Amino acid sequence: MNERRRRMLLTAALHVVSHGIAVLYCLMTPGEPNRPLMVAAYSCGMVSGAVGVWAARTVTTKAAGYRVSFTILLVTIAMAALGAYWDGGAASPAALGFVTTTVFVASYTPHLRLMMALEALLLASYLAVAALGQPPRPGHVFLYMAGMLVLISVCSTQTRKLARQRSQLRALAALDPLTGALNRRGLADFTQHLFRRCGRAGPAMLCLDLDDFKSVNDRLGHAAGDELLKRTVAATREVLRPEDAVARVGGDEFVVVLSDADEATARTVAARIEAAVRRHTGVSIGAATAPRDGDTLETLLHVADRRLYRVKQQRRGGDRPLDGHGLLSTDTVGA
Image (tube, rainbow, N blue to C red; front, side, top):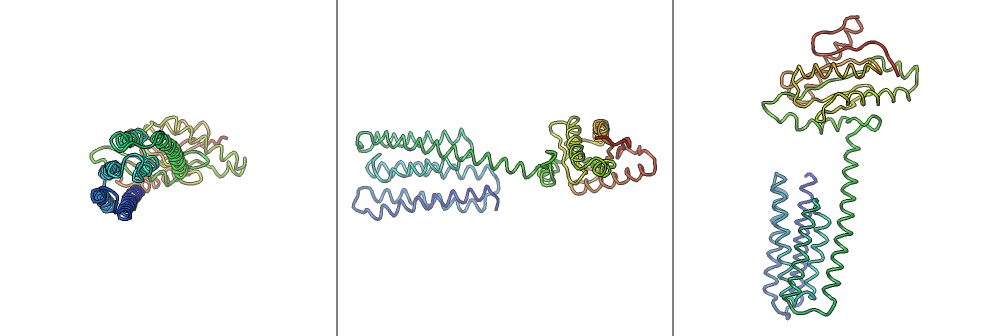
């Protein structure tokens, strides 16, 4: 079960529990007015939460999940308003339903504008109950409103701070810490959607391998080798489009992903990368393009790596490959 479904399931379960507590409150105070109406209203809230639990296990699209969650939340707001009104107004114990819903909305609504709109609806509903129900003690509504505003501010601020931290952690998990390029996990995530577009060229994969990188580490030290890797990534990015990406998949092995690129485009970009990286070191490149060479990431990488190996073999033999599937740089190695 993914994160979206877990959040939806938790949301629905909380609605069931909160409305169940409200029903128990009504059963514990049978002598107070409007108890049958309140039990019926809170029972509807429990049913909506139960539907949400079911939907969390069956709904497959994000849009449908949002619609279900939004509907349940609107039902909860309506039940909180009706329950507080029937229980005596803004000063009744049932008005705590506004407080719990306020905290929930501030903590679990991902979009700031939607959260603000829902909180405004909650505050307006409470003010309507205060105006239509029995008059509360002086200052009661002010303190209630002030308390809810403080809760909204604290919960929403903390929630968004945690969301930023989670986003940063996800980004770090997908990046190579030395060069800032994608790592293997980031490469898989980046290319996940590229193979779902039928009838369109690409993507293309370029496998890059630095020539004689081991000798740089042996002669100049690992610090120089690390600097060379960072310069390679920076030089490669200079010639890529915003929709393309570079990943480090090994010590001195890189993969460039070209979105919507045919063979001619891949060949042109490979030549530009070779020219850019040549300022720092030699590089060998093997290319593969979908759908001709495969329709999965693994297949394209296998084909591109095989062609890269052929480039390496031809370099060792003193021949420069001219078959269009790979490029060979000069043999000069520089820091």
